[in-house]
Amino acid sequence: MVMTTDQAAPRRPAARVSRRDRRRGAAAVEFAVVASLLFLLVFGIIEIGRAMMVMEMLNNGARNGARVGTLAGSSNTDVTNAVNSALASGGFSGTTTAVQVNGQAGNVNSAAPGDSITVTVQVPYNNVTWLPASMFLAGRTLSSTVVMRHE
Image 1: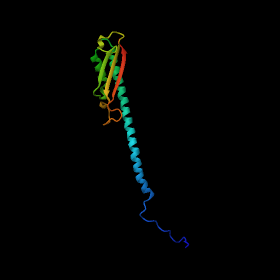
Image 2: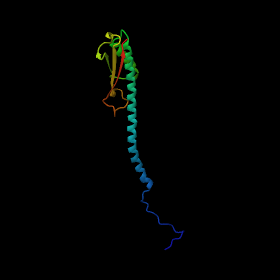
Image 3: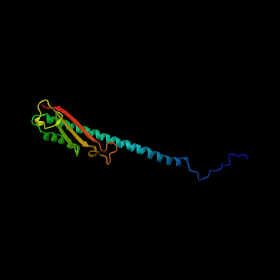
Image 4: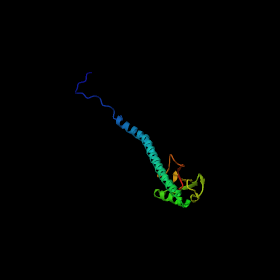
């Protein structure tokens, strides 16, 4: 039998799903995989960026404390107050400040000219994170140490 152009081709069954509809489900699965990796990357960047910012603030606080400690007539309380005032803008809680003279615990007002004054500031990362749950730095302690000569 020969078909002429006037005759219509047989129709496909209506139950067939188009290729476009099948791709819609695959796109949702692909997005779920890629989105989870993207969120992990973004939260990691936020967490590492916050840790770097906190480290810089700890460096600044330890440096200010060491500067005060090198001056004649200063005490360990003056050093701790200088560190706390430098860190006040960061809203930190749970910082610890250790002051050493020539590598040993001591008071800076008993230091002689030329002695080294060491100020160490520490804070647990869990106290300064912006994220509700820290993924990479949980349980770590951020620390900064500055050493200067007493005047």
